[in-house]
Amino acid sequence: MYHEGAVLPMFYLPPVAYFVELNTHKTNLLIEKEEHLIKQTYRNRAHIYSPDGMLALTVPVVKGSKLHTKIKDVKISYDFKWQRLHWMSLQNCYRRSAYFEFYEDDFVRFYTERFEYLFDYNEQLLRLILKLLKLKPGLTFTETYEKQYPERADLRLSITPKKESNFNQKPYFQLFEERHGFLKNLSIVDLLFNQGPQAMTYI
Image (cartoon, rainbow, N blue to C red; front, side):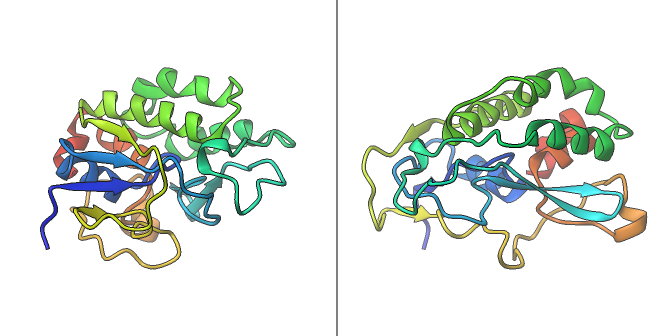
């Protein structure tokens, strides 16, 4: 069934498939702001390409972010220096890529400044990435939680790290692919750091 619009969750450094959906439904998008946090999802996890294969980066949330805490109210934990770990991982994995140095000044503040809420952090990162991609979808946020969206493509649970993606992705050059082959549907930063301004041709 073809839908005129879509409802998407807010992810941390979302995978490429997320931006394909954003681009497809860019004139009629809803971003879910009222759902409860779903753990072990891209809401606070991103996958990048390391010399050893796929590496997961997870943003820790404050303990006691109960199952009934709305995503917009979930706070980021700073009990350990996860920002330093994520930034070192991004540097180690992409320093040799064609465009990392071109973009690193845009991203560094997200790994040096503290953000209180996970949703706000992810939203500001998303807006930066959209700007770098020159992608201008109309982002509207949900004001209530709805179980179903009959008129829209409900993508809140369809893009997940828990199962193999059936996303048919156009391959692009990845730094370590001679070791592990092409890894599909990684974080958008993998595409951005490897392809730079050409990234949109793969979305």
